[in-house]
Length: 274
Picture 1 (cartoon, helix red, strand yellow):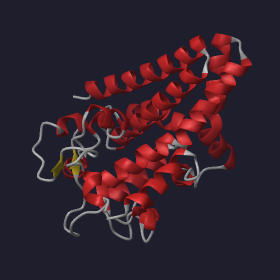
Picture 2 (cartoon, rainbow, N blue to C red):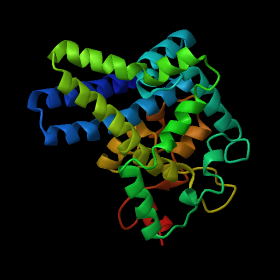
Picture 3 (cartoon, rainbow, N blue to C red):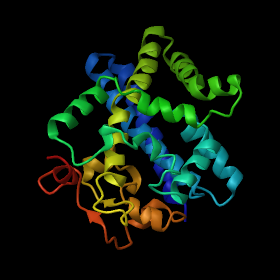
Picture 4 (spheres, rainbow, N blue to C red):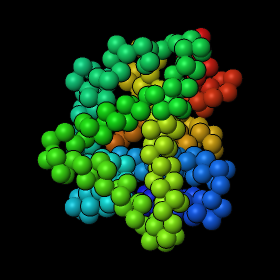
């Protein structure tokens, strides 16, 4: 039942490794930015994989589920899987209420109030892309580990950076290349990933017609699914209805709140931006 999720994680890491290998081989500006784009997309996918694990949708054995997700998903993202799971399950229990921890950062925040003018939205997108909205990711990193000791906190938040540098240096014996790989991970995480998470979150819960509708489903085209809705995560309303079913099963279910895409003339953003 869970084999496809295992393949998704394998797929994500193959893309990450190939992007880093390509940069080390060509070592130019173009390969650096290509690596940043791929890394940001696969970080987003790893977040989706971690999300699946929080519902027990990777392995039937809960200990294996936690260990596997910690090593391959949460640690590279700078998160603690245990606290992410607690946090996320509260989101399901108190969806879009004052007790929903995912709702709190967006409550009374003009960045998340829709409909919104196109000009205002583009300003937010630009801030995302140049790193001025890095706190969007940094906030969740802090929340997911706020109960840990200082040493554990520092290891979980920054340990992967050191590991990434050491692994790249072990294979290349080149300090400059290894520093650029480390820089690309940080840069992708606090710029493009911020934008991808924002677009996905808008699709999931922003600008809903009434309070009775808690979330929506977005099918997405190929590029939207690769960058913004990896591994069928865009079918969010179905996920809330069937949280313990792997996300790839949701595409086989009938959605009553389906939007065909995020962009385009009939896309969701066209409806939310005035």
